[in-house]
Length: 607
Image 1 (cartoon, rainbow, N blue to C red):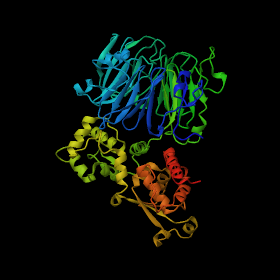
Image 2: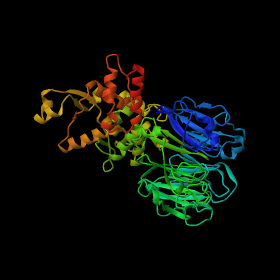
Image 3: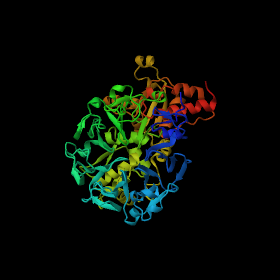
Image 4: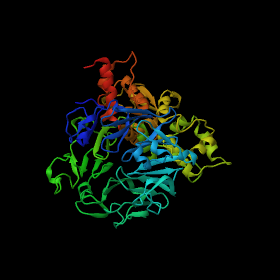
């Protein structure tokens, strides 16, 4: 089996410069020679022969055929939030709200720089337009030659090529060098590496809009005319949509329920018939889609069960010929794609696999990043097992006390008084913005977040200081705030004889924060539901018969996402007892724990 740090790719054979099999002709999945892949956050690809890899927290690697790999590192105080790609242009968004560009000079009209014709792939250049206009960029998207930005929370800007009206500014001028304001109340933006159109969602009203090239009816608005002003895409509410991704002649839309819709050219839309409005793809009707990637004229869809489906390829990824069209080189219907053998050993959650696609190449890689923020996001959205509230009367929001106090270094009472006292009170929207940062480091509105910090008299900067991982790791050492105990050492036979055995002291206690268990383990969530039905408690029993040393190491892993043994701990015992922890405790970040145990085996040469 390959080592658990692999990126696989497929597409044009010219990409064999980055594969380990130098004579590989592709299109079968081929393992790349990219190193340190456990640090990868995202891969984006532009033209046939280049792609950009984001390695956390502020490092980038650029691969180009017949050229050496280039490495970039943003300033130390800049943390990358997202990256996007066009044909030969890449843009990087940092959590400070700044944008950086990486481009070839002959694609300068895609980059909002006054001297963009001086751009090269040799350096990353800051896009100063937004700073000069005092615009904080929340998110970005790129199409073919065009860029889209959400600024200051909900203001939509666009720049670049506009030959089909793809900027949505109401005219079909050739291009707009600097970003142009479109409208406000925009919450999400979508495009595609080869798309000459884009889609966006508004919060008020809750709608999906589209504009740009539409000769294949790929906007899903019922006609084939280019749309120079945004038009409403009917039959969908914006809040129902997970993602939208455009290719050169078709568009795919996935809802939050996992349904996959498409419109556009019959050769590429997965229906084998022309669709002028978004229509559910029959072959994926019973599947829950969770990820989407599109290239020039093809699509990849990953399901919640880690099944990969694709169509429209110029390569033989699909298992049989029955899915090929009359030209015998593209698949007309979605077909299940066999994953590399390596991946089948690491399936388990929807967070495990990541997919990406560029002009003529597709990528498949594992997500080794800490899923703590994802799990805390789910905990926040569920509003379950909260132990206090903040806000004003009638609009209070349930929260987990230990987490809020950990991240702010203030008590709940202090926060309540400073934010919702008699003199000052923030609204519910501003409160939610604050809590999104608390739970999963999201900065949805920097201005409002800074206002909240000022009211709390917090001096650190949310975009740079006190990251979630750092705060949670420090919380592990705070025994005074731990509000829960796991009882270890009770076996099932004794328990059947005496339900109250724990009162006699035949156990050991492992202290922990309740919200950590709720966020990280499905097993403990089930336990809490059971004990809550019998009445509130601050203890649960663990019936695994594991040693207290192993359980303590697992709990520390919940906080730090790593395992470090002391001289007093038996590595063989720890590896043996935690080998089934992923399955037993129903953990989401399976790969990371597996890797930590593998590192212990290698360090101590365990068989």
